[in-house]
Amino acid sequence: MTIAFTLKGTRKIIPFAAISLVVLGLAACDSAKEPAATQPASSAVQDPNLVTVKADLLKRLKIFTIGKDEVRDTLRVPGRVEVDEQRVARIGATVTGRIAQVHGILGQDVTRGEVLAKVNSTELAEAQLTFLKALAQVELQSRAVERAKLLLSADVIGSAELQKRENDLFSAQVERLAAQDQLQLLGMSESAVKELAKRRDINSVMPVTTTLSGTVIERKVTQGQVVQPADALFTVADLSHVWVVAEVPEQQADLVREGKEVEVEIPALQDRRIMGRLIFVGDTVNPETRTVMVRTDVSNPGRDIKPAMLASMLIQGRPTARLVVPAVAVVREDNKDYVFVQTGQMQFRLTPVTLGVESGGTRSVKSGLNEKDAVVTDGAFHLNNERKRKELE
Image 1 (cartoon, helix red, strand yellow):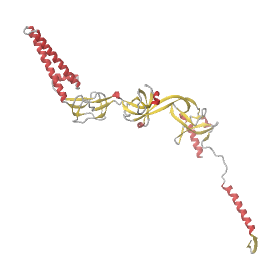
Image 2: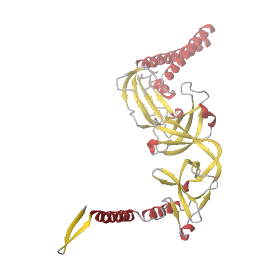
Image 3: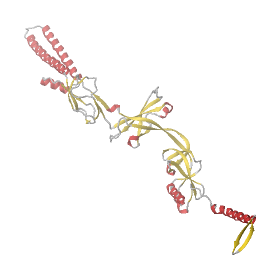
Image 4: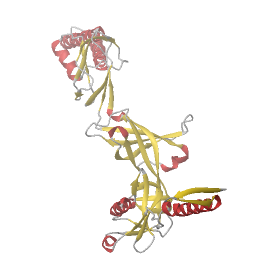
């Protein structure tokens, strides 16, 4: 097959096979050139975690060689804040009666002896009446004895009559003492009893006073309420010291001893840590939870630690030899821990590590490092900034 065409008026006939060879040759040339155009220029790929520093930055770095040291695991057990039971008083009425007045309110700071409420009691009135009758009988029998002594001296009566009147006086005195004790059991002080004996005036109102200086943390009474001595009307607590109580699993019970120093962490106070000492370690295991109760006393001068707050107690475990790294060497990136390990005289690699909690300025190494690895301590922050700068470039 041939193809004819005209060039400048001249008609030429060219075989089709020749044209095909020319087209295929041109296509081959284009296909050979195309890879050369799309293929990227070969270049060495840099490790983004590898940093090469200059001499001036190297002088500012401090290198620490990884080694073993004694490390104590920290046992974290849940706990709660409670009122110090040695600094709390449950206040109630000493007589049966009706609440006439209520003075104490929830959250009020009170001092010892302050009146929280007043109770109107017929029981108190009857006890005072009995005391006054016994007191009058003592006075009557005393005068009878005095008259008997005068009559005996005048030989008007015999000694038997004097003895009888002395026995009546003794009985009256015993009844007065019994009535006085009953008044004191009902809550009247010795001075109040003396005032009653002096004035001979029955007063059926009994004040309910606090026996402890502190804060009213509970109130269970309203005006007009009928109360009995068994009822707790107010709870007053001294919150300058509180207890933190925790439950330690029985497998770690041998880690706790009375007097041992522990840390208390309170999430509600922005995870504030407070030092304390164990003042009590339970002698029995709770059969339901398989735990041992421990207690520590915590100073609370600002009253910011509230009873019933949740807390955690941190107890140091047994010392064991482990690899440790200074806490200042740790670099945080994307919520993970890293350290810079020296790989050459002026080269350092950002290496991911798994570490334990900080204790005494060091952290135990769980994975990522080997003994005698050299890591950067002082200057790790600047080294990481240099790595980021080069990565951006």
